Amino acid sequence: MAKFSFRLVMPERELLAIEADMVVVPGSEGDFGVLEGHAPLISTVRPGVLEVYQGNKVERRFVVAGGFAEVTPERCTVLAEEAIPFEEATAEYLAQRERTAEEDLMDAANDAERAAATKDLAIARELQRAQAYYATR
Amino acid sequence: MPSLKTYRLRIRSVQSTQKITKAMKMVAAAKLRRAHEQAVAARPYAEAMDKVLAALGQSFKGAGPRLLAGTGSDQVQLLIVATADRGLCGAFNSSIVREARRLVRALMADGKTVKILCVGRKGRDQLRRDFGPMIIETITDLGRPRLSYGDAQKVAARVSALFEAGEFDVATVVYNRFRSAISQVVTVQQLIPAQPPESEEGAVATTGGAIYEFEPDEGAILADLLPRNLTVQIFRVLLENAASFYGSQMTAMDNASRNAGDVIKKLTLQMNRSRQATITKELIEIISGAEAV
Image 1 (cartoon, rainbow over the protein chains, first blue to last red):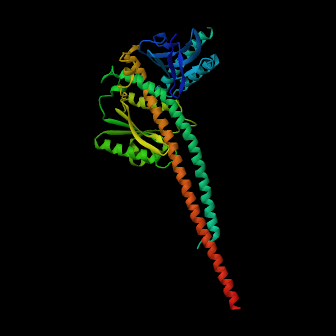
Image 2 (cartoon, each protein chain N blue to C red):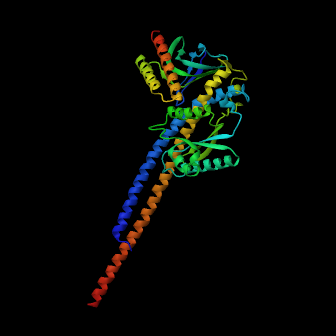
């Protein structure tokens, strides 16, 4: 199977730059798998789990908190606002994150803060659901 | 003529100053390295973002969301003056402020309304004297202990809240671009409306002229992307500024240590001269005393 170059970047640093056989990205309109020679595509990414395949096996998983994916026939770049290796994003960690977001929502002093906290909360819940689903696989 | 003791005291005080400036130089050098690494690490994301934006920008010529197309006016100008919180860094802050002053005057001469958002304490302190009433807000204490994307988000949130509230039409940022440890360039960059990067060597070229598919659609992606792009731009500004600050501080402290060394040398020379003068005088006194006997 031909490989293509895959990059997972966060604003602060590049998390991963490898040659992969397939990557499954949680697009906002549904998950999509990227293989070498994929049609050019730009998609938004919803909070969820991203899988990197080597051969027929999932080599690595990442929990991403939304962002964008840019796909061309020879490469795929995912711009994630935040991405954590799946192993580090445990259920406890995500539950903690949800609690923090809830507290932020309670403490929010103005509309902007409230909106931000609501968004964080939605992301945290979404991530928990995704984590729970993938943990069993 | 000052006594030997006063010389010695002065030398000692200059020496301790030199110790401090030397230490500061060392710290600045270490921090500069870290800031530089951070700036380099942040580059892939910004580049990828530029590429996506360039691809999108082509389908939106002139139209599109307000963050890209603007409000259709340029009457109210927001100037974001990004400086440091602290001084002792040579001309770092003053060069930014000088450029900001020039811009404000030029804009006012054009009959525009100017509002200033200060990022960093030093900028506010220096601008307050001339343009106090125009400063609508100051954001300080960013990047403690180290600059994070969250800091940029904080600034971006404020800027977009102001924009949503219709407080300004055009936002421009003044900061120091990092070229090297000894050279920082004051840079003026327009943030809102966003200026899509030149697309000639961007997306289309690399996909061999293929057109992207968009999911969900261009408008939705753009609406999602532009606020993030604003944050990324601000993050870049903050990173460049941090690196420039430490570069500037390193140079300034290096100069200060060298100057202190010069002063010490001069004072030591004076001290030795005066010591010799005293000895000579005493000798003359002894000799003439002996002759008189």
